[in-house]
Amino acid sequence: MEQGRHLDAIARDLAAGTISRRTALKRFAGVSLGVMLPSALFADPALAKCPQSRRCAGKCCPNHAHCRHGKCKCSKGFTKCGKSCRNLQTDIKNCGACGVVCGALHASSAVCSSGHCAYTCEAGFSNCDQTGANSTGCECATPGCCGNSCQVTHQNGVGQSYYSCDPLGTPGNASTYSLAMAQGARAAWTAGTDSSGTCPGSSNTVSRVTATQCAMWSYSGTLAGHVFVSAPNECFCPLATDPTWN
Image 1 (tube, rainbow, N blue to C red):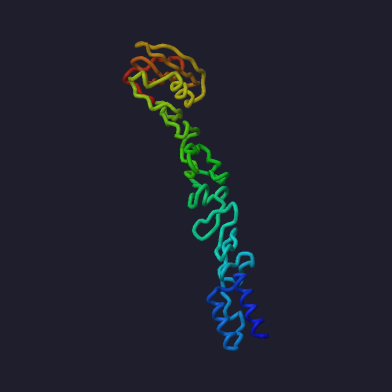
Image 2: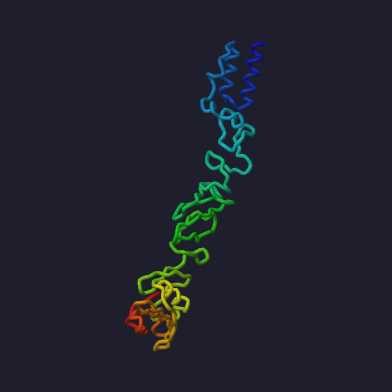
C-alpha cells in the first residue's frame, strides 16, 4: 500500500512537469528497492522559483509560454525568439520580426506599434526611411523628408544652408535651378525686405535688403547659380565671377 502511494506521487509529479523522466526513473528505482527517497533530492534547482503554470517535463518555460504535450509553447500573440517568447507587435527589440531593434539614432524616444518602429526625433533630424519595420531611427540630418529619402542640403552662397527635394544646382546651368530654390536660399539668410528682378543675360533674380546689406540670387539665364552681396542702397546683379549657390 505504501509503495503504491509513492508510485502515485511520482506519476503526479511527472504529469505536472515538476520532475523530468530521468528523475522519475530514479525514484521508481528507489521504490522498487523499497527505499523512498525524498523528492527534494531529485528536484531541479531551476524549477524552485518556476510558477506551476510554466513547469514542463522538468523544465521551466519562459514568460508568456505554457506546456503542451511535454514541450514549451509560446502563448497566443507571442512568437519564439531564441529561448524567449516575444510580442512582435510591441517589443522594441523584436519589432515586426525577431531581432529587429528599433534604433535610437537621433531619437529621444522609440516605440514599436503594430510591428512598426515609431520615433520622436531630436530637433533637426527626421525619420524618412519608413519601409519595413522602420528600424533605422531618425537617420536624416534634415528638417523634412522627400518621400522615404532625406532632403537635400543646399548652400545659399552667403554662409547658410537650406533644404529641399531638388537636386543640387550647377552654377551656369539654368535648367538645374528654379524660383523655389532661389526663394529657399534667400529665406535662409538674415530677415529683411524681399523683392525680385531681372539682370543682364535674361537672368531672373530674387533679392533681400537688410539694415546693412543687400543680397541678390540669380536662378535663370547665364548667371544662374551666382549671388552678390552689396550695401543696402546698392543692390547689384551678380556676375559670373561672383560666389555661387546651389
